[in-house]
Each structure stands twice: as structure tokens, then as C-alpha cells.
Image (tube, rainbow, N blue to C red; front, side, top):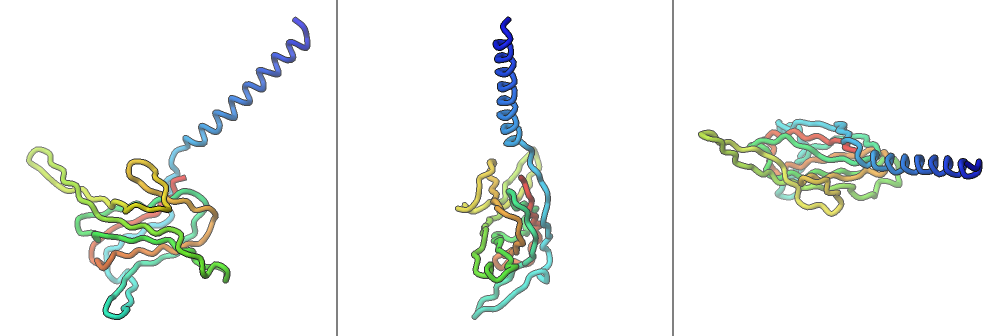
Length: 179
């Protein structure tokens, strides 16, 4: 065989292998498992955990905590029961660390409704509970009815949870980084 022809074949094989490796690497990156790192958790079961203020004839209560979030995809997860608040509003706001950030709007505003599903098996029946999200324009659909949101750069954020007037029902809430 001619030496330049053999060199050309070897070079073509190497280029093919490298090209295939790049394509496979991109596919593998897109199929990486969910990260599932909990960055925030709270169990709200006591009215004393909420900060309340009265405006006119109405009282508004919310639980607030500041967290540092890395760049990535996040979702809120809940452990509710039948006594949990029927509606929850969760907001993520920029926590101003410098003067130029003071007027930045909220980053994410999510609203949830508690839904009970009756399960009947033989002589037994019970309810399972979950929070269903009210459609969100700034959220990404993760499939299976789950919704997440993206943080573009590492930053300090304030999480604000409003039980919409129902302070006595217990619910556990966590913010999970999924990618």
C-alpha cells in the first residue's frame, strides 16, 4: 500500500473517533442524572415561625429565609398532608448585596394548590396529598407535571413562603438543585 494513502486512512479514522467522542460526550452530558442537592429545608408547623404584619384590616404572614444559590436548575418539593395550607405562594427574590441590586424584581414567583387524591384498595381507602403548581410563565417544564427554574449566576436569594392565611397546617418545603 502507498504510504500517503495509509497515512490518509489513519488520519480519517482518528478524525472519525474524535468526532464520535465529541458527539457521545454531548449526549452523555445531556443525560446526566439529576443532582438532587437540597439547598434549603423548613418544616412549617407552628404559627410562631411566620412574620406577620397588619395592613389596614388585613394581616399578612410569611416565612422568610436567605440562601446562597449556585448556577443551575432548581425545584421546590413538598411533604404535605390534609391539614397543610390549601394554597401556598413561594417567591425567590434577589437579596441585595450591593446598592445597584436594590430595585431588582423578584426572580421567581410560584403558586401552589393542595390536591388530594383518593386511593381505594379493597376495604381500605385513604388520601394522598401533593401541591400542584399554578402555571408559571418563567418556569421550565421538567416532565411529570414538575416545574423548575434556572438560576443564571451564583447569588444570595431570599425565599418567602406565604401560606395564604392558613398558619396552623404543617408542611415541609425544600429547595433542591436538580442540575
